[in-house]
Amino acid sequence: MQVLITGGTGFLGLSLAERLAQTGVRTVLFGVSPPPPGAIARLTTNPGPVVALPGDIRDEARFGTVLRDYGISHIVHLAAISAGPDRERHDAREILDVAVLGALSVLTAAQRHLVRRVVLVSSAAVFGPLAFTSSPLREDGAIRPDTLPAIGKAAQEAMLDRLAGLSGLDSVVARLSDVFGPYEYDTGHRDAMSPPWQCWHAARAGTLIRLPRPGLNDWLYAPDAALALDTLLRAPRLAHRLYHVGPGVRWSLEDWCTRLARHYPGLEWGLTADPTATTITLPPVGDRAPLDTRRLVQETGFRLGFDLDAAFADFIATVEA
Image (tube, rainbow, N blue to C red; front, side):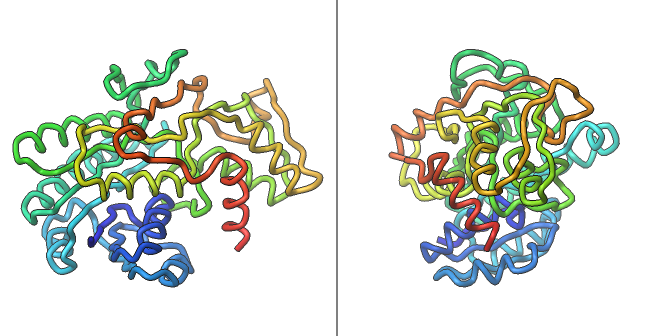
């Protein structure tokens, strides 16, 4: 298996590359941003070779050349602009160009070069206001994306379904809950770090943490997201074109900060009702329902590698290393 990860130098791409390299898979990280210092050196300590190549997924000639020259058999499409409201106002064309035309470029190149499977990574954000319910969110539930990045993800899902139906391309959508991980950094294409990472960054710096709400969510640890994507890459047969990926349980940023306070003595943290006093950025609306992940578990046997305590311990060990 020769895997190419678009947007592979982002934090989830690095976690997936580490997972694949540990199992001996050859991996190409394709993206517009160079990997952070030391990342490739860390990854190359594993059995599988990892190569980082610069490139824009909208450059069809360049992308096709890489697929051919490296004998790519599988693609994980992660490339995206994770924009906040300010960027949405000023760079709407760029956001949707990458999301829609970029994904189209990836899918058509995969067809042309006979790639064996494409895993397109989507987001729970496609549910928009429909996510605020008391029931877990199912794959067959209605979606109503209400931001440009979410609209782009919804378009990708629909486009993959149509093109796969026309061409027979073996492809699947992995719709992820909110991901956090130790390899997070500012790529210039992501306007906010994950709230768990923000809390850790403040704790390490010894600054006050003030949360606008407890932040209850089915936070997905990046190595578990990588494990799920690897599972979808390798599954011999898949009965559906869409799978939810998440821990299936929720925990809060209060739970996370409790553990941070044990690790960083003297850390001050708490909730505040004053918007001007908030030090951690969360989505402005409330906390959504968790993703229903039974389809993935029942069909592939997927199991999380980390509960909250294990994820916290691994996160701290990795960032401190």
